[in-house]
Image 1 (cartoon, helix red, strand yellow):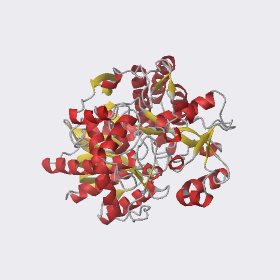
Image 2 (tube, helix red, strand yellow):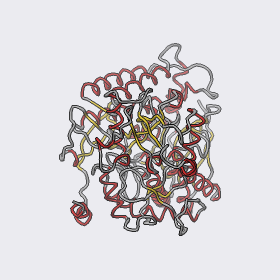
Image 3 (cartoon, helix red, strand yellow):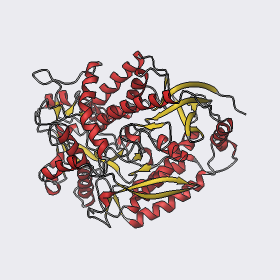
Image 4 (tube, helix red, strand yellow):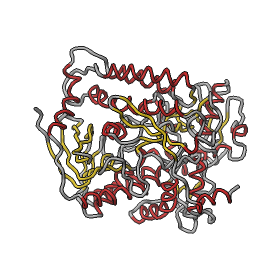
Length: 572
């Protein structure tokens, strides 16, 4: 029998990126006891990778910009698959959240008149991205982190949560372990906010780092929560392609926002063929498909990408506006971007799908469980616009904090997680150590990444997806025999054996949803169903656990109210 370190909070926030930090700050401001758990070190968050800017209709550069224009751009970018109410709240509240960051000490670039400077980005009809050079996400994390520390929110670092615990229908805590020594820790909480990010490590080429293993999605799914829109995985058009050690590392859209040009091996600005009006500032799904096509048809670069060129721009201005990109290429690829083009190609970047949440409260379908940021589905529909992720996590992180705190106040009588549930969860975690022989977690992960990259990637067909589902089932069976050696102290094989359970479930959810959607929409491209179908616009795919299996059902999209629908009539 294990003994457990125990901590009790009113609100437990799992994940310390932008959404988790903003939720923790807000819940603490509501006067409840908050705890913040992060898998890595505080500040090591994917929010940092959102370099180009935070999208908010402030109208500082383009005075005609307003929330209605931002709302329309977001819905159009998401191919009308977005939860319209989430998109509306986001567009309305984003400017206030950015000004709040400024008040808390964020240092944005400035216009000559002293207001926050905003830049152009793909899919946005106005210059809307408030930015700090090309380090916007880093500045946001720095600001939120300082605010959370100032508010004295306790942070449990290098602590991986493995199971959400429930009593009756309500969530009541979580089981975790310290990554350093493998010892288990039990958190009890009246409400829990998931801010655990996405699914990137299911794929071979990704901008995401080791933490992105579907933790929140997998744990909530295991508890019976609903996942939606899982077919929509965003492949950012520009990741580094060379050298191999940095393949997939993000090249911010700000490079194109500042005037970068995409060319093929013939020197052609090929976006003229795909979106002559918006060119390089087309939506991410469109640019990613264009690059994929150029490479496939033999017009790619030496290393299987295309060229992103800023050499026609003033070199000193490039260094000033894109300092991170300048140093990234100089240090990692020995390329001076002011003199040579960058080689770029698509990289798995962001999950538009996620947990089904209530737009107003961020509540999932499990009482007491809330979700914000990338782990929550609905906001971005079929394709996310650049810059919308940062404003999303600010807006919905705050709402999650408010409503999780309110839930805790209304349910003052906390519930102790049942001991039998805790012991069962720890047994499941320790089983790989007991096996004398079995599958290697590294081999399973390697095969999973091959399956998802090659069969459920940017371009999909029915035959490939069905093959992927068969292979995923085989990997799930092998996971039952997974074996790890050594002790629990800093054991990456053991950590991966746990991660694989969540990765395989979310990968299956992606594949099942991709197979069911027989059209091409946003980030989901079916070569065997290349057209956009008006019928599919009305349908959301819902994934839920069904015994040992996975159930996919269809749910009609909520209908937009007439006053908002009218905005789209006026734009034609």
